Image 1 (spheres, rainbow, N blue to C red):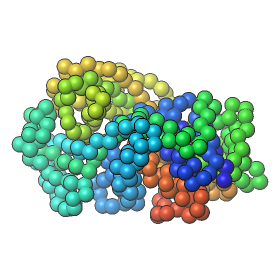
Image 2 (cartoon, helix red, strand yellow; image 1 turned 45 degrees about the vertical axis):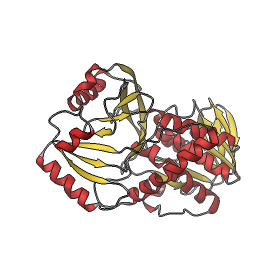
Image 3 (cartoon, rainbow, N blue to C red; image 1 turned 90 degrees about the horizontal axis):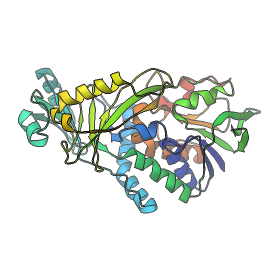
Image 4 (cartoon, helix red, strand yellow; image 1 turned 135 degrees about the vertical axis):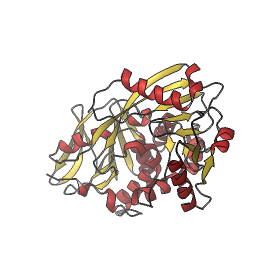
Length: 368
């Protein structure tokens, strides 16, 4: 089977890799370089649990989270790239008695060991992270929250894909999907037609434009996220710290990532003074000692989002051979392994290997 994958972010690279491993002839088209957009701009947090009862999204997220230890090991063996899978957990600081009560109730609802949810009092918080502000009265700790270096993860998937036989063509901008007699026959990239038996659109926030090229409609749009990094040697924090308005991610490389805004500004590409100032203010209120650290870089990315917040996965209605994997929003890194395996099983075997009803493009799509 000859497959054209459009989009060299984490979803496109991971899925191209898995498809090639089944024997498919895969061409991966990326207009820039792998991970140049949202995948490279993320923080790499792997946070599978929501605050409410189990949903189809959480089921998908947990399934992907469980794959990461083996994925990190396999990619390191195949490519030599260490994706820096860190498993120290996340601290969610609490400031009021009501927040502490809710955290204790949530910890009681998750007695199992897999995610290690616990409610900490102020003394435990000081013991674990003494740099946190003195107004932090407690914390919800989730040991099962992990993180990776997302740039390294995309690079590893891209390298593994090429090693598995994927033809990676960077610098080609896909303008339209070729649909003939109700079937996807390929795409047009910079005037060149690239044919395939199957076309998979994994172009993130730009996927809707490609669907529109043949008269379809998919309401995926960009949500801009801005971030910055601080030097972090010697480290001030040892866990991810995630408050309501800011998160802090310490990396083994010696950086501390600080993020992130969620802005509905279209494809307006900019790092703005107000956004960085707001993040910096929130970070310093949470960890005053960060004021002595140097800012090393700032950046932004466009997360793909649809109105219900769920990813869009599956065959496009009314067009044979056309598939979509997009709208992972803030969870593209976390959901990459399961998305890749799900889409591969579905495309090559004719049916998904898990319940996907809530993710189908049919919920939004108009074929023509």
